[in-house]
Image 1 (cartoon, rainbow, N blue to C red):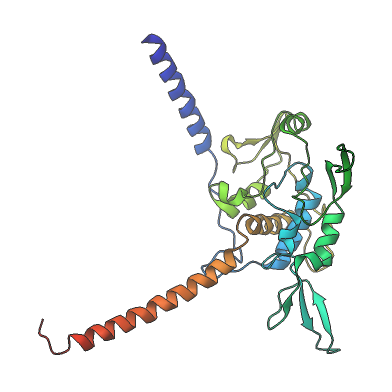
Image 2: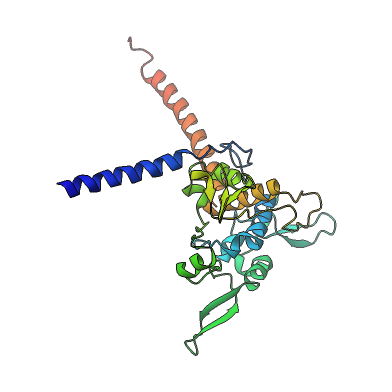
Length: 281
């Protein structure tokens, strides 16, 4: 009985400590994202830039095991290609953007942007001829390259901390996209040993050093600021798309369903009035 009470007390104290630490995290402030409203959509330019930030900064530690390179070029993806007619030449040309009107979707297997992105990755796989592990260029069917072969290697390279997988991070964390943006921009600049102060992380101490800095990722668009806030917003756009790539399609379907229900309600009302028009109530 004494052992059981001791164990129960230990569990209670531990749970209380975890809850207390979690409660110390500041609530993330609301950030204006293009996908927030019921009719919102992804800013694909921001998603493309966010993928660049992930590739050049986050991918050195964090995996995205639920994504394959082909997903980038599927319909609704940031690098989906379409054949559209040029207004200048009248010829059909391939563009990596969603056309406002018309356009023919290009199958991901024929998408040169996605093939280029995949081929730039070095994938370690089993050689079908020798049965040995070998390095080869990536293919669109490959999952995103993992930065470490296993958890032990990941912890050894990060001071014992295990970098989380980012595939569905905005869905897995309370606060979603607002939390990710607040965390990336919330570093105070103070540290305690190998831990860094961040008021949006439970306990205010996080093992991940500040990943973003001014100008760390060179954007090709000279009009896009290369600031921590811009990087954080862009990579959050990309992570939100990764966690919910079919959001736009779901919202469009929801609007259609709501319209159908409104029309059905009106028809049922008029049918009711017609059937019972001569009856007293």
